[in-house]
Amino acid sequence: MPRTIWSGAISFGLVTVPINVQSATEDHSVRFHQYHLEDMGRVRIRKYCEIEDREVDQGEIGKGYELSKTQVIPISDEELQQLPLPTAKAIEIVAFVPLDSVDPIRIGEGYYLAPAQPVAAKPYKLLVQALGRSSKVAVAKYAWSGRERLGLLRIRDDVIVLHAMRWPDEIRDPTELLPEPVEVSDDEIEGALALMDNMTRDDLDDPEFRDTYTEAMEQIIEAKREHRAPPELPEPTAEPGQLVDLMAALNESVAQARAARGEDAQAPKKKAPAKKAAKTQPAKKTAAKKKAKSA
Image 1 (cartoon, rainbow, N blue to C red):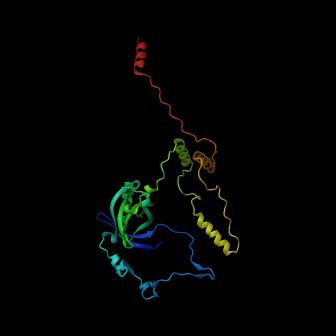
Image 2 (cartoon, rainbow, N blue to C red):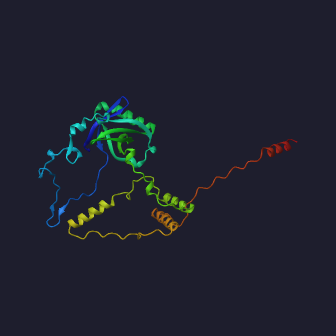
Image 3 (tube, helix red, strand yellow):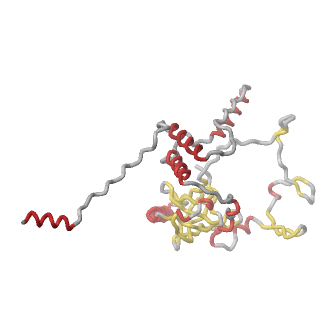
């Protein structure tokens, strides 16, 4: 079980849910250290005091805010923990919104929130079921690591997940990155939609979605450990370059996507047959026929 990285409570109106916070993700990346190439001695970063010109250990190090080059305001961990904020001890829910109203660029790391005490089981389940039935997510404030943060609470497999969120003023305006105005034809848009359709998946549970970089690094490390040549880099399937014919590139991409799915690359995608409109006769003609029969 992952370790608890923070303990507090979810504040939901007058309802309080004691919780423990645990990381929801794991990092399996290959880690490297720095070494002196001449003798492979480990290179380490040491912390020195500029005034005393000596190395200091972790117990002598604290936080401070630099007002000027000659004046620093020391701030202790205890003072940070005692900040006069309601969010210092609790994850305070402030609103409920539809998930699709939240720009994904604002959503960050995820954390599992587990009930901290037996008494928390009922209010915890209440919040889980209320969020699930409402199809909404909760927006909350909380204070960690010396700053107040914005968070998003959602449900995953009956467990409450907290996602760190960026404040609105932390998102840069992307408009300056827009390219020069260009025209895109309907055929090119239809080609892109056809490619998207052939690349659509129902889920991401597929061997294709794996960390091939880490796998390659592990193969290199294992080869060097066994004193054999590392695996060769595969040849690229296409040379990078400037795009000349956008439509041709889209058609070729659609053909490759169909071939990868075991379909006929040249066969056109089947369309659903159009429904024929029911033929109706004018009311006057129907009435006239009935009149003729009665005569």
